[in-house]
Image (cartoon, rainbow, N blue to C red):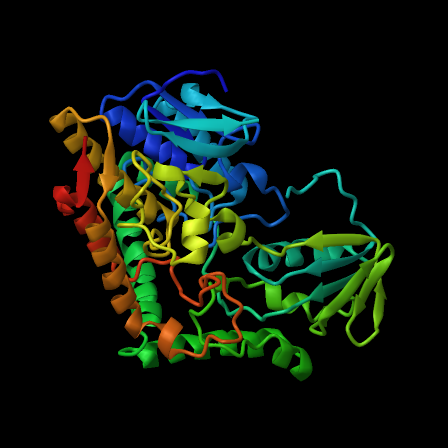
Amino acid sequence: MPDTIHDAAIIGAGFGGIGAAIQLRRLGHDDLVILERESDLGGTWHVNRYPGLAVDIPSSTYSYSFEPNPHWSRFYAPGHELKAYATHVATKYDVRRHMRFDTVVEGAVWDEDNAHWTVIHTTRWDDSIQLDGRKAAVIGTGATAVQLIPEIAPRLAELTVYQRTAIWVTPKQDGNIPKRIQKLYARMPLTQRAVRTIGSGVLEAIMVSGVLRYRQTKMINKAVEKVALGHLRRQVRDPETRKKLTPDYSFGCKRPTFSNTYFPTFNRPHVHLETTPIARIEPDGIVTSDGKKTEIDTLVLATGFNLWDTNFPAFEIIGRDGKDLGKFWREGRFQAYEGVAIPGFPNLISLNSPYSYSGLSYFTTIESQMVHIGRLLGEVQRRGASVFEVTERANTEFLDRMTQNLGDSVFLHGSCSTSRSYYFNQHGEATLLRPTSTINAFREAASFPLEDYSYT
């Protein structure tokens, strides 16, 4: 990267990076650079192209509230529409010109003398893959696999699905959005805003009552489990297969998903569900721990992400006095004040942080963080400061409060030991989700004490 100083460097050109850039430009910062390792913007909606790719919550809530999209074709929009929406937003709000593609960030180091960050920089589906008549295996049964498996199964001669942990699946109320409704949304935006409000309210109720307030509302959680189990019974004929597909952990310990086509796939005679652990992968097949070998010619990995060892943070970040963020989190506790700031890391706003994810829609998180950025940098400008840093006191108080809030959650009072959930870090703490309502997240983003930061 050229030795150039910018007002801000944003790592990633997904929806989070686009939102951060929009907010910074609103605050008058136009000298920005957005560094993206891929060849185009969109984040996961650019990288992922597998058959069946779609958003797993209603698309009415999966968008910026200030830029509604009246043209979603389905209640759960397909991936290419999310990609197109990202391109539209970046173009309309004039942030695409700040993006530098094919640029991999390998690290960031705080320059104490000059009070700025030096950035150091240097799994994809192939559409050409031929599946017709092949013998394939899919490893993994998370949200990606639930979308992918029903799409590829009809084209294959044999399909073996290797499951380590069953996933909770509920019915998907999906369908086309008629053109007349799309036109109504475009002509009367308030109608779409009303739909968004209702959808967000339902998602909020699921998150708060079913996950965060599990101890008080356990019956709601159990009711959702019964809905999911009834869905499974109706769609899978074989009792033994149903048993294998039944989760042995509480609903909410691991992110659930929606599908009307995943379970029926296992009724096909050429589709097999394997739950015996994999011992090794050979050039022509997979061998399980009982010695059984299944011959395959195509292997599809839907194994998810390693959040806590490699993605929090995604690259080396060295702050004040040589403080290594990854080491600090992994050797101590994962923590971030209001899900965005860490003591010892001046001028760093980390959108992908412990306690950052609020609600079930990622856009809830993005927009509450945009509000936090606006309040914080507005104060920086007012003071004429060049460096901001959250105080140890504020960070500790926030961490203690989040830990206390988790005391009512399904993570502590449910049966989560067998879930193998990415919500839990290596310390056994569920620090990914913010254990408050989204209303609280927005309220605190707009009113956190300004003295929680130091300014120099």
